[in-house]
Amino acid sequence: MRVVTMDNRGLSPPEPLLRILGVCEALEPGDRIEAQMDRRPIFLFPELEDRALKYDCVERPDGSFFLTIERPS
Image 1 (cartoon, rainbow, N blue to C red):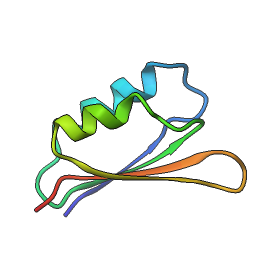
Image 2: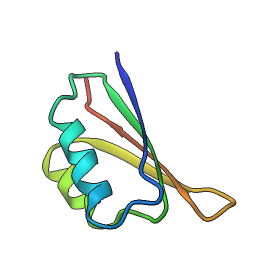
Image 3: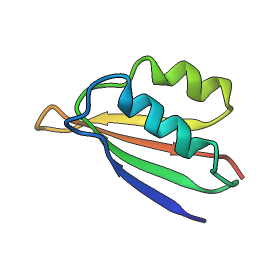
Image 4: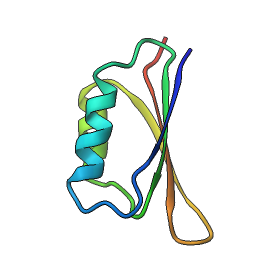
C-alpha cells in the first residue's frame, strides 16, 4: 500500500482537480491519496465515482479540507 500526500492549497482551479486525477491514474489497489485543499472539490467527486474510487472529504476548523481517495483492493 502506498500513500501519496498532496498539498493543493494556494492553487487556482482546475489545477487541484487535474493534479489529483493525474495521480489517480497510477493508483494500485489499496493505494491512497491524502490531499490538503483550500475548498471542497465538488467537481472532482463525480470524476472519482466514474473511476470507482472511494473518497472522503472533511472540513477542518481553519476552513480548509482534507481529502482522502483510495483505490479499493
